[in-house]
Length: 245
Figure 1 (cartoon, rainbow, N blue to C red):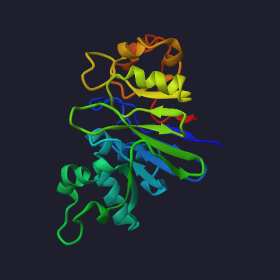
Figure 2: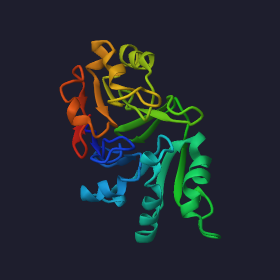
Figure 3: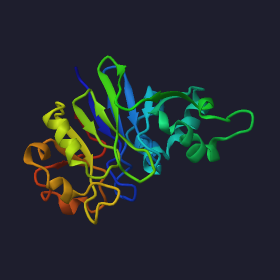
Figure 4: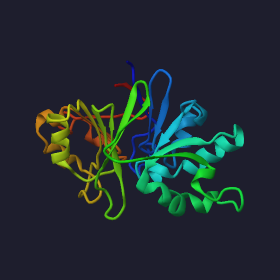
């Protein structure tokens, strides 16, 4: 079994040297786009890839660096091939995605009046394992980020934790590794400042070594080069690189 993760970008919402923290999850015959932020179309273009290669897109939450590229994705496919992308998202985000994020740009009277007019919608329930292909499963875990704003992290194949934006949850990470069989953690990381809506590097460095050794850092700021070698053994994911899972 060969499953690959290619990071379209690894940057925070305000990074200028890195694309938005979005990724392609691929097996031999299926490609899933994990989040589609504002910079996702350009990142795809720079990689020589097309949205036509993507079977489905999964959205973890509604910030622009995770969902801001959906309008371009939808219109690109509709105007080139007439295809509607399969859109996987937590059931709690279906109505807000249209009403609060996409309606202003996509609404066209009598033609595009709902999310179903531009995507094939597949709502997902948290804590439920979904089989997306013979080699890929995904399970949503609701994780804290912005008060009053739903956000979900992912368990990939029940052994890889891929965080969305989240505040520090040491008990969750410890439980996933020591009881849940998690062998790898891809975690968002705020390198500087206090952790109000993101987990900070200092918080991750406080974890026991058996947890830290499984963590790769993503969703970081432009100051990242200053922190190479200062992460207590945790490595940085790099944009456009393919990782074999």
